[in-house]
Image 1 (spheres, rainbow, N blue to C red):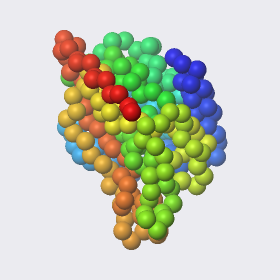
Image 2: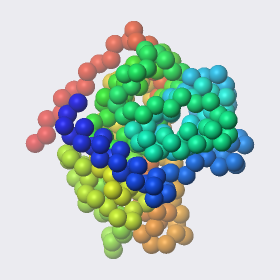
Image 3: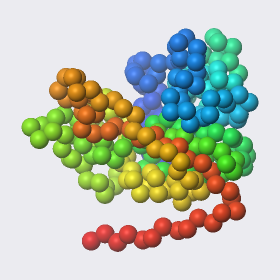
Image 4: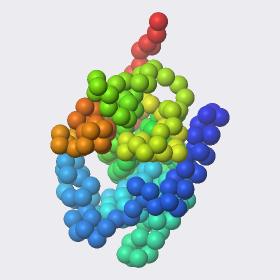
Length: 270
């Protein structure tokens, strides 16, 4: 692990702990209505086949008292991993209040060394890869702990959304950040597509999708969660989403460990 990785980890751990204390968005636990039809809440596309009872599910980078309880309510044996102790405390509170049995572990999404080979049937990974400089170690860790044939369902911030301006200009939402860049993105304030106070990193499609394939996954489906609202106020989240898709959701399956993965070709930049 590089110094940049360590610094990003610690910075974002503290940032999310503060967000819980401030009761910011994404720190709201599951509601009663979320648990009535749990798979309907989290699997509108039907990728999970309608039944995950008894499956060993890892909710990765998913603290906050929402993802874990919903999958547990669907009958899965759930493990929740997050780097923020405060986010995981929300999971403990929900588990105690609703008498839900979940395993809760504080660690970074790129360090799953406490788990065994092929320990999980399903890995659910909500938006969080943007908080690490490098996502390849995350994919490698997930590939190790997921059984052959298991599903990895992840959601990411799109590169275009992280490149684009937060406010509309007369030309729409302009690309203000380079696609090929290093280091964290500039700080933001009041954004609904970025988290204020965190360090976020732009990952290219080659890294998001290509890296997943090279780690041992086959992409079975890909969707762009729909947030566009042509009637929304100018420069609002709904208005911006008419021009820039903020998220991508990927369904990938762990292929057999006997299958050899080809190395990527080298790209030489001018």
